[in-house]
Length: 187
Image (cartoon, rainbow, N blue to C red; front, top):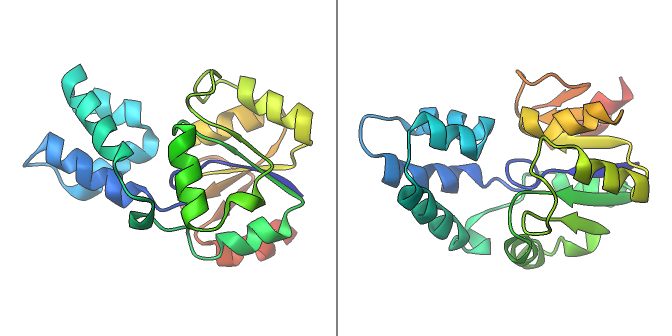
């Protein structure tokens, strides 16, 4: 099986760190849970919802880029799926250098045959251009993501979809943890 992966919130549990950073900027009166849920839609959605100006957005971007690779962890069980897949590719909005540092730190780099990162010049998700490129090159069977915008392009080009830890997203498969991966895909 050839799998296209989202990075943040799908391979790595980065949203708690992002939520804390945004909490610093947004301030009092907003719960961490609310910020977390806005970020799970998209970073752009959270920015718009909290009406953050460009200076605040740049501060958030700078602080998120300063997160050390050891401050985030891969989700439990994800490495077993990476081992099982014939090919793994990543499509992420995160910059390449950050992705590689985190993958290298956690010894997961060798599982991926290709990465399209936010600074590679492809349009942002949910545009399907990067997915089409990766599908044509690698013959993808499944796209895994935690947000709707991760799965929309896969649906548009006919790749099966798997929503991770997000039961409200329309997908072919839903996983609350990677321990269920092999059982869910057999259904």
